[in-house]
Image (cartoon, rainbow, N blue to C red; front, side):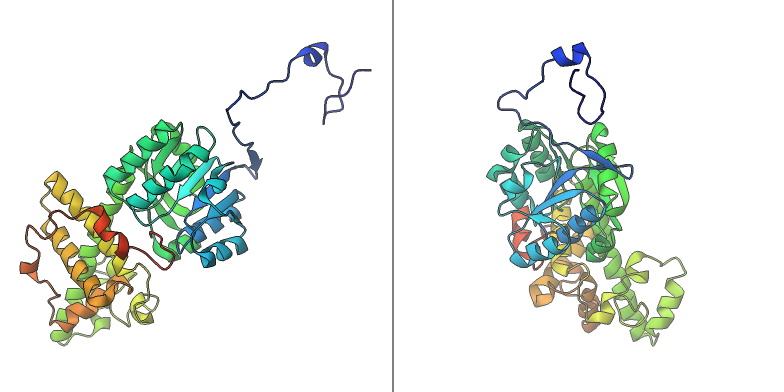
Length: 370
């Protein structure tokens, strides 16, 4: 009797017995095997950058049933990730050798390019999907994709909004710049870490959406802070102003969720000594990217540039480790006018500013972008 087909208990046909076993061609790594678990594709995912954002994101991928390897320079970050079920590796190269997807969360474009150039692109199996969730310059995002494609891979930018709280709770918003054919895979993958996944367009579009969003956020936070400072001068309590504005046309996220004064919103950083949250140093970095884009495109954006100057001054004065809403203290202390008043935001305020100028100020304790 002919031997049974493995796992089926049925005799093999003559055609099956004569069929040659296919072997992978020399020098070509076979794509790792994927399984279905509970209707969801189980992928092998490498996470590079396991700090305050990358660590919780990797943990949520583990919870979703994916096989996750990870790498970070900081031992404490690695330990926390291992406790969440991530398999740590001693180098970034080793983390990606069996990956279907490589997810990076790093401080700046320079770090993303360095990571790719240091052998990660070469070590990953052919056609791996590289997903960069850092917040970097649009030009850097497009260059990173070109480098990945030249190395035989696919790539997308997918910066996030939601901060550490959103990363931990799995409620982030992902702004995705990707090819149409890659987005369905990205949507399923990123949904394990976020509540909303938005396809913003092609390469770099995710980064463009992120810096525009944060320019809105910064200017609205400054406006809300100035309104509370003015209200206080006019004898209006913080609670009274909040009760009116939060249900009127002044309603916005900077007011109702991240209220910059103590009292009205118990969960806001203002009620926790302005512990971030979203650090002012990171907002400063993102506004620097926005200012660079404003300059390069010739966009008329006076409020965005002024916000960038105010946060630059705030960080320089020692506020970088505080939540970005702590700028309200500076505004209040200066009688409603923050350092670098209207005259401080001259047209030349950000001339010549490069992405690298913000690298050192954009790190959290794990050296990671939020």
